Length: 65
Image 1 (spheres, helix red, strand yellow):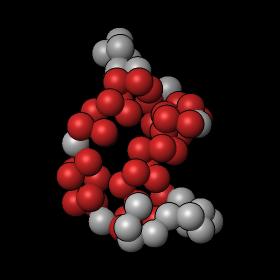
Image 2 (spheres, rainbow, N blue to C red; image 1 turned 45 degrees about the horizontal axis):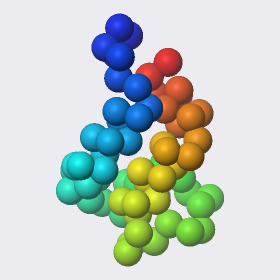
Image 3 (spheres, rainbow, N blue to C red; image 1 turned 30 degrees about the vertical axis):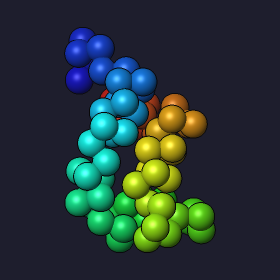
């Protein structure tokens, strides 16, 4: 991704526009990324997943830096 200028903002925009892709990952897969987060449930896992990247840059940095 180096040089692609795929910023955190662009990632979260893409994720927001493509929630169905995150939903297709499924609750269990998303929960496996954040096992200690007790606020993630089957009703909100797509929004919580996106929120993790919007709020905390460290998740973006772990993947793209």
